[in-house]
Length: 554
Image 1 (cartoon, rainbow, N blue to C red):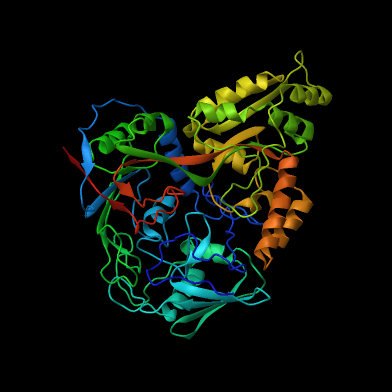
Image 2 (cartoon, rainbow, N blue to C red; image 1 turned 45 degrees about the vertical axis):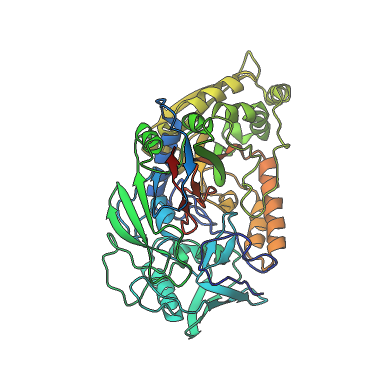
């Protein structure tokens, strides 16, 4: 199998690998919402716990917000030329630039694909595509990956990028256990037969390898460069970091040494706003031309002004999971109770209350991940069926089931209030316990002392949490474990997807949890902006195709 890439550089464009059936695009199992509170056997979360704080900060921004109307802009027409600078407003600011040692999605978002590159990258459809490697071959037994590098590769300091830098980067990752080192499961060795060829060997097949290489585990660094990693960056991407102010802004300048085509906008300024009102004012005053994320309510006035703004919702892998404690000694250990809860929930109502942007999700795999199947028809909203199941389990209006929903206060109270109302209709007396994150982490995640919980599990390809009996769900189905292990060891994409879909259907049929919705990020932009990545832009945000043609006032 050979995957190809043009000479324009690697910007994660879709379609680059169409027709190549041996590429593996499954991901290593991490849960950026939980960030590796502890190393988990069987594919549990694998990152620092601080990234859940990053996710929760975004959640706060999505829940809290307000709007001040403004006068419409004067009549405008597009100018003839693209601007040299585009400003982007984001939420979560990095405290430093050390991507090998610092947790948090803010660094991945701005640095991967812009400043640092790997052998492979991700497309806007969440697929593995060529990057520094123009193609690769996988041995029939799935144990050997041979990557063929593009020619003329250089770092931003002018140093040539060769296979030796790739080998050094991966060996450093393994020996020093940099962030996401454990993503390279079954790793045996990496070598460079020549200056433009890299070979990675595994101890046994691992379908997640290529996916792992699209993230931090696959980034290639200059083995000879000397720089301060917390405040500087030396990469091979289309941009360099020209200026960095912690918690405030990053200025990216086009990398004159870039091996591919120059980015469409020479300067990109990323500004971070902790306050929603300040962010909205920045967009309406043209201080920034792009704002992401923005809540549905705050986006509405921009959406109502299509002559001047574009508002788009992008697909992502965030799954708002209503976790149910599957332990036998819990009321939710009874499958009838779990099924009743799923039938009782009106997902359309939950989504409508949030502005109607999110998607219904009937199982643990979102639409952008391998193995996705629409499972929303398994447990349609059915109050009478929910009541009947609970009656069978011994709960009635006179003797309701008493449950407690525990979740972190950063998710707000609206979802808890809606669930309490919906479950009351089927004879469940729900107590909503909104707590500090640290309390949730101890009581729910660590001690597993809960009935119901709520977490935004935002990481892509994280299905292995359902094959991990030690995870906080207390869910254990040997068939799911068997199917997941077989999928991860598969060397055929179609077979892998089929196995994951089978496993996901079992998890959903077991009512191991309820998936309230698949959260979608809304981005608001000036009408003159094009090429900004709408899908998954809170995780990876490649900017080489971004351009802005300012309007001129008549």
